[in-house]
Length: 286
Image (cartoon, rainbow, N blue to C red; front, side, top):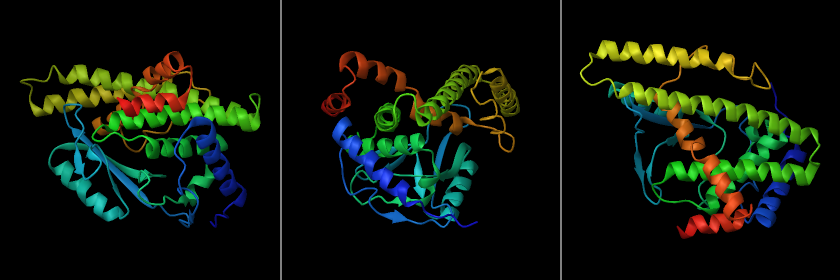
């Protein structure tokens, strides 16, 4: 299938970036001013890992960034090989395609053609998320960096949509419903993380076979529990775990991106009256 690149979406990204700079105080750069056509092919894969019976993320070390709990690959086979090595060492891993990245202003990050398939709200959130990374990034503090970018991405997206399309627009309604569903899902995954953490603390002295059995049973219960959640779109996550069950590395992703967002959002609104620029300056100073 040929994907025709919509020029209007490319111009729309420039509108988002201008709003993020002028109204939110995010750093504007030459990022997302060029286009890379993926020709419907994946371009980047990321691996994360965790101990098998402990929710403790595997860390890679890089210059400038420090310790980081994920690693990206532009070559699928190289990432798959590292994934297999980590599994042999006894780690739970999560390896899959991602749709964007930030080089923190060191290089000119392109618009990827796959980004243009997103809805207006999802695209705004993505661009603002990545611009937040280029504005504030704390060495060896991935969880804070990603939670911060996630929260600012969401807050910035809804403000942009309200400003650009109007509060009663279809774009706002679609984004809000999708976000509310994701928040419910992320909450379930964070609860699952805590349940597994409590379970693993009882594992001292147990045989490997018993540990694996108890872990598998609890993860099966976690997957079934999604049926009890009242999503706007009941089918949004209904088939997510049909082919592959989640593991520790999967649950750690929600700690990395979602566990601190609400606390940050409260601080933004109460202490800084919603002023994102002032809030980010405070984070830099800390």
